[in-house]
Length: 420
Image 1 (cartoon, helix red, strand yellow):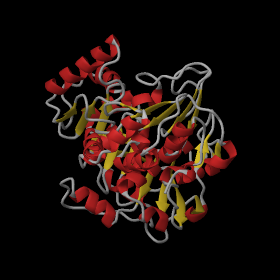
Image 2: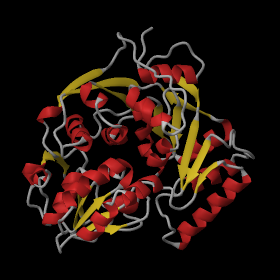
Image 3: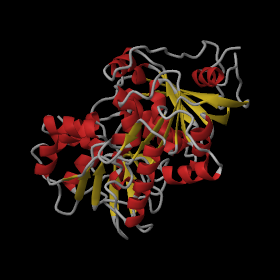
């Protein structure tokens, strides 16, 4: 029976020759991740079920990224709980302060590899599908079950095929493309579906750009996003010590419930308007809306490539006096590279606040909380009411280029006017 990438991975992980959409499988998990907001409940549930030891301490990844350094007594208590659990269970891959955002750290450390099942206690774990693996997010109690057994059940999702051809014209980037796709599908247009990306546009993307695309699949309801592995994937992994790469491809006659095609060469910068990620418009339609805060970072757009394009726009310019620009490198590695390349100096000289690696202002519970009546333009992935602070604020989502240009002008601005 012909199968898609997702079906093949789940079949192998569950010890079957083949699976079909709708099948219930118990799959072996290759890597399990939880962070400082989700690990405490997972640990508590793990203990309540009577488990004593995690199934494999080398396959569990624990880290701090959402509230680090600790922003409250509760956060500090959660950190202490996780540290103690990591020592007790001899968790090899425990990353304390300054490692960075989980969905950028795991790829950097080589955990996301073709054919693997990588599960995180966070919805944006779909990011890892850029590496040709099955990756999705689960709740903390499901993660507790994985900690104890190394397995979890899944319903095999139907697959959607998204094809894009043509070249993106800088500063239009992968964030603009995935926003456009989400606007087309709607926030529930791919609910519990595997979204497979193919075509020359995606194959020409860097791994940074591919991760941005898969990261936002959950915003259209997707169970997972996935791409084929190629020489770009292999080079990225080899640089991180992964010697063998075994790509998984869909069969030529694999079945998809839906297919859609896009022309990337015709795309303008995109902006997701309040209060839904699928409320997407061309930047030309929303130009001139004044902003109070601009944010560049997160698991969506805090990688080196994102900082480079923002720095190209900010170099030699100053942030508007009415705007607070916050820049948060996604990981320690990105922070160090940005420092060595002079990007952080460009940000600081422009008037930005550069923070330590982590989730930053993304979810409104640490730095950069937005107040009532304020407007934020953000390179993050969600803009529902209250996402970055007050439910009376508004959040617009855009690429790092659009955020940087808007920070300079004090209003939503087409970055093409400053890019050159």
